[in-house]
Length: 491
Image (cartoon, rainbow, N blue to C red):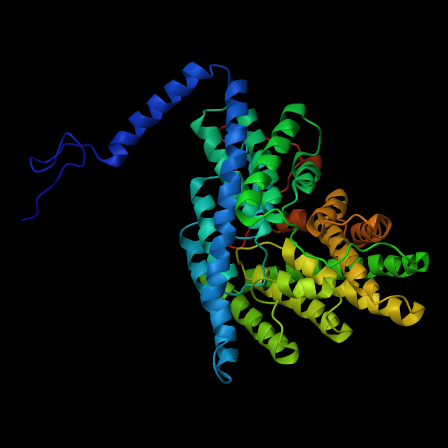
């Protein structure tokens, strides 16, 4: 005969003087809020305090996220690539497959909203949910994305960092009991802090938040965005160092005006690559949604296997990684002109295919780093043409690779101001202002002409979610449900 234990009334054997954590938590929270309210009675004061706290905590969360991925890459990717004999091929394929399977199970049964890059989720939260990002999707994004990228998915960590940081700032807003308008402002704070910490680029973080999320100049929101970006960057600098993301031997400059012709050509090619990437992403994503015979939680494993196969081809041909795992080491070779034109052209195509496979199958990870990688490879290949045709210095190869990063980023993400500033901050050089503006604006204008809807809005449209034009918020009535995100949904 089983005995019943009341979960509220303690049994005689229980120590009633020490209530459980869950019983103590509401009282602790009430005392904390009472203490906060006595010292900061106005909501504006609490907003300022929470904004400052969010900047520091988002920086710490971003650093923890990035270090977790680095540790997992050592554990999975480097071990797979270094396996003896020909077994490295199978381990390189198996590693992202297992990571995709784990992520697929987690995204199906634990945190469906953690799928995708993270930027569309924050946009939805900002426009439709008063800026609320739940604790579940924040934790899910941190854990599942770290596992998938760390095991070899061809995805970036920058977009997920934005969602994680938006979740941190949203949690702080709820703890401080901020109103709906200020809670929404905290979503922009989290996005800015996440970009600043991910790219080591606080200025670009502010412009990206304005271009992609806010859409207008709210003085209170803008000041919070700037403060959070600066604090997150300071935290990231103090732990990981203050150097730019890419260490270039020399600052590139425009030494020959005749090269502007090839920079214009680079803008055209970057637009073609951007549209091809976006169309492939959306097309394969739609195909996976029609693949109902295979369980949805298996889809990311299929994408992982395809990515592993592509990574094996790259390793066999060029003895270089960059398809699976950290792409920045191989990308730096292109920026310094140390890769052959064949390698760069092939890597551009392979990265496009692998990223589309990892992302469209319902994985958790971003497209920022892949866009920069594809752009650098494309730019470096065009730089070879500049050297061959005009007999310019070999430094042109690295300069074109730098400009190519911004051009493809502008064509895919459609954030033209950010695409210029982020390259300045990531490389630490400002000598390519004119080439960057020519290539970036050409890629942006042509990509927008050929594909009118940007990638994030197109991904949301596939999920029947349509945000207001210009990024302004729409608050549904209290009795109207907000869109529910499913596996593979919302970018």
